[in-house]
Image (cartoon, protein in one colour):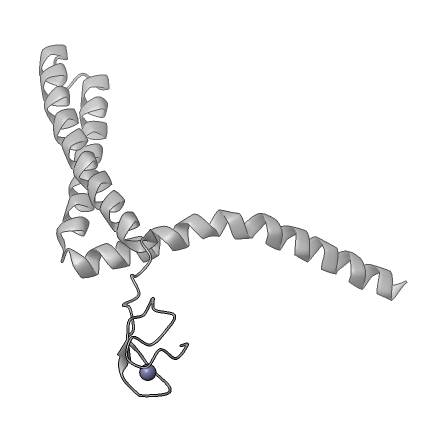
Length: 139
Ligand SMILES: [Zn+2]
């Protein structure tokens, strides 16, 4: 009886973990990406993120002011368009930086070709060579 309950709890925990892991994964990746960007680009990336948040919250404020009648339709449309263009520009810059960082992360490091030396005569042998050019021994 007790064993059945323990087993059921284990199954529930396993299922919950399986559900939770994919939910948390992207956050980790974004965090790593942000870390990498902040290391390589100084504070530029975070400044862009900050700007984006600023523009988006200003747009929300504008909509609120328009809805509450503090802003005329003309003023609202004009200011909104202005901030939307700015926000789009910043979002584009952020996306470009993220894309560049992702490419840098996924690109495998090129392994430098190592020089081989002949085991028989000790002369340098090309890394692709099968036989020593000096003494002819197989390498
Ligand atoms: Zn040799």
